[in-house]
Image 1 (spheres, rainbow, N blue to C red):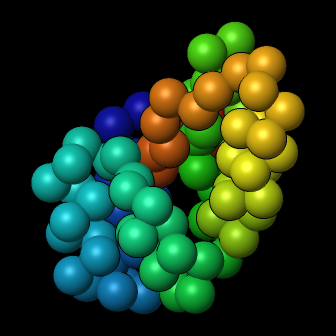
Image 2: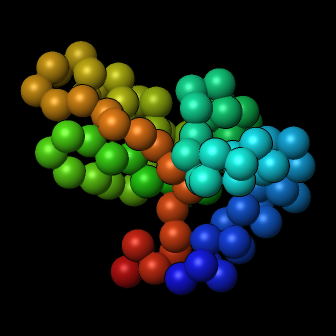
Length: 90
């Protein structure tokens, strides 16, 4: 599974090496400014969104939309966003 995660980081590195390095240094976690950059350079990259009551996978281009819905509704919260591992999509 570690190798699958590294493949994801390599994809980000090809799109934006500085962004890939920063996300790797954060152990795969993505900040809001980094999410905005990912939407530009890797819009279809699957990210893991962890909430208080569960988790789901979404493309980088869609994460902010889902986060806005979750926080607007007020019944849950988003804990973090991170680079997904392909085995999580099975």
